[in-house]
Image 1 (cartoon, rainbow over the protein chains, first blue to last red):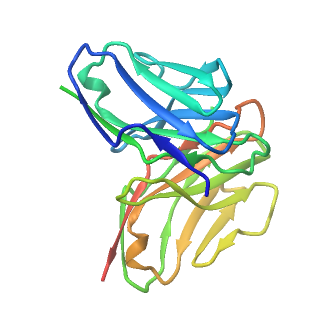
Image 2: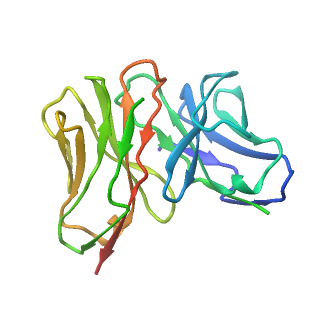
Length: 114
Length: 116
């Protein structure tokens, strides 16, 4: 059974804090993604990675960075959290072997920045 | 750039009835992939159904089927014999064939309610 896990389901942080969101997949997938989900806006791509130590900006990278030191783990970092980063964060992975294959999603982290 | 539009923010259906969720997209490409994802209240996004643009035949997965109209750039999802467990957010997504590392472009979603 394929699996993408995220370190927290719910997270509450204060403005200015450094926040780490962790994502781990057990499918040996090359590609991993971080999305932000907001009501009425759907899913928006923050960053993605197609290999270890490789990363590319998505549509809304401002205020975020990422790290991929190991194939199975992809971290999203909020260097200095702000209230407008309160959102649902979804991680996904994809094998890359064929474009027909789906992305597999984690359960999401609901982040509240106070 | 490609865009995906889901024009129905919310839909409601009676249990055992049929409902159709709309999705249109804008692209200049001739070959691409389309997906419908379901996100129940538990938040776990799961794939419902997918379609390759070069295939004329509409995809079907049990009670779920699509009406793919390539010329109209439309990819609607039909849910037959609706069940309470079908209540969820549904997202339509587009994947380009080239140069995108498999990125998906999502619509804004349709919230489906199922009435008992």
